Amino acid sequence: MADINEDDGISPAPIEANRSKFKIFQEGEADPLDGDTSNFPEFNWEHVRSWVAIRHAFKYSEKQIEQLAAQDVVMLEKANGHRIYGSVEAGTLEAAKRIKQVNPKVKILFYLNAMCHYGDYAANKTWEEDWALRYTDTNELVKWRNRIISYDHRNVDFREWWIKRALDMTEHEEIDGVFIDGICKVGHRKYCPPDHAAAYIATANELRSRLQPGKLLIGNAVRAAQRGDCNLKHLKYLDGSYLEGWQQSKDTIRDTVELISVMGKQGRMVMLTSTPMGMDQKVTAEVKKTRSLEKRYDIVEEFIDFPLGIFLLGVEKWGYFTYHFGPPDASPQRLNVFDPTK
Image (cartoon, rainbow, N blue to C red; front, side):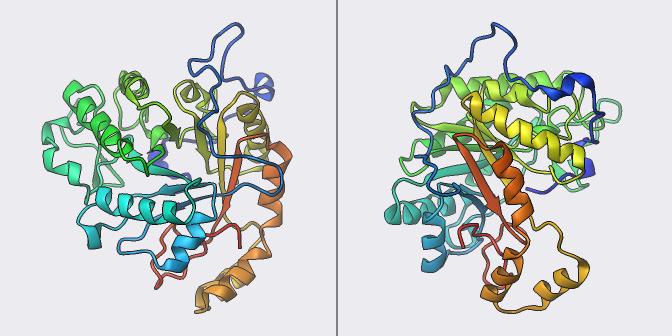
């Protein structure tokens, strides 16, 4: 996952009078999920509730497992454990088992991208090239960042393959749900045909209808910079959303506070992510040259107040916060800061 970039097809939305009040449901519209929060992580107001997105191509250390077990939600990103266990699915499941052994209450999410075809998944053995999205005028493959093949949700055979990937993982008791990344790409004006966003919704609704009882469906969907309804429409099938890219401007910051509140009040999980704010180039360079992970945590901690304050301004029940410096990669060589509870 990455912050806002050109591949998302997003530009900051114009500020309109009717943007002051966000809605998931229109007047009189029923919640398809019936406001069911019974499978959400345990919640109280004793401290800020935390979540983490993380990956490790090899194997987490015991200390890292303890750190992850201290969170309320752990989303095991792409590229987990495949270099040790042979596939992302196997690596994800092994990490989930280890985390659950320390704290069975942690909610573990399996990563599934809505549009990007990433390598190292066992499911790729049955992938068909005909399922890739192509430009209608040239028939050339659509590639995100000029290298990653794109999915085409209009293909019903692809849909079944994609849905089955999720259901195969959620069959395991250690996997509490699925995290769908890349939702902002499904209707990208540059890369996708006009009917593709609706095709993705059909796929997502089918996954929701077939998801095993008690399992969660979370997505990278809601963004203050997204035109229109900020993608709140996706919360009709999702239990909650990751929020990123909110630090662009004072307008996106203001709207994010309201989105956090609206989502919580309407029974949806909020998973806000943040990097340090107010860190100048000199301090950033200092962090990068520091070879002590503990020292990096000490420096980065000094810049948490503003993003945490923004979260607290809007947070309702079912709100979770994460704070990091660097990619969500736990490789010890990278010395990335990823534990918001430290």
